Length: 94
Image 1 (cartoon, rainbow, N blue to C red):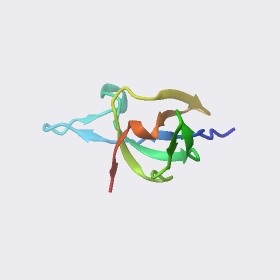
Image 2: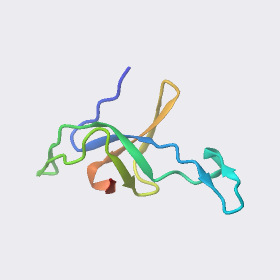
Image 3: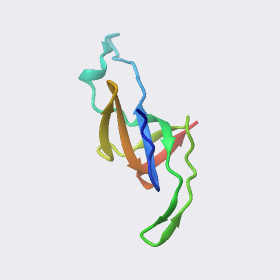
């Protein structure tokens, strides 16, 4: 089963960021807040949303920063994804 975003939606997968404290302790993913850097898995086709044309400039494979509590979380095949609008993406990480 696959997830295909519609209109201006983008499917994101959180990146595993291993963080180490100043004292050398590695923080596990569950002990941290929700990561804000994600990888784009799929992108909707764009189109007209609220009578405005939306062109998709985000592409699959991009690393992006999203607002902390934005989007809808979805779990498929034991993998967690987040679906957000393209306008919820704050920046592309290069």
